[in-house]
Image 1 (spheres, rainbow, N blue to C red):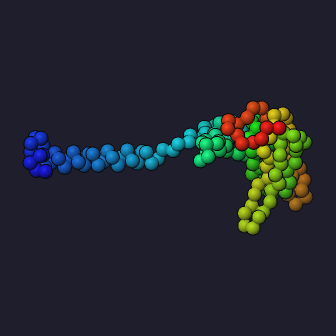
Image 2: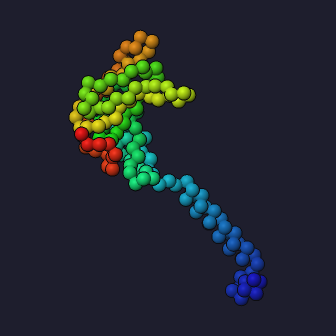
Image 3: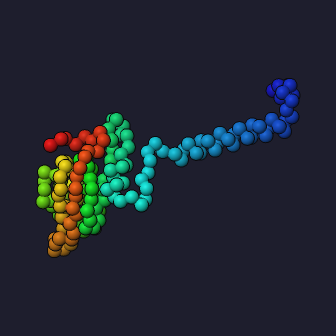
Length: 160
């Protein structure tokens, strides 16, 4: 090795520096590669429905995995077939819709130690109102108007 280093015109100090620089460069490239991910994150300023519609990532079976649209207050939401509305408001007791042809409702529930939020799957194009009830009196907390148009790419939702 020493002869090779001398043949190349490098001193021991230069060789050590070269190896050190190469090790640091390798470490930096591994660190940068380890911090990156294959899915992109949504812009923090995007509305929940924009984020959910735009944040599909490739799943292990080749389909899409779509983030649910969080529902926390009365608002109007644009969604696509294949989106899911996740009611994250505390103390929700019941969720209903005025148009079950557009929204398939799921009730909040507890199974063992797991708690599941109420919500609704968007199953068809159209307009629907999702009403959220809660509290000790099971009274209406708020309603969300959902306008569904289009389909999430590669959605596994059946066509209606």
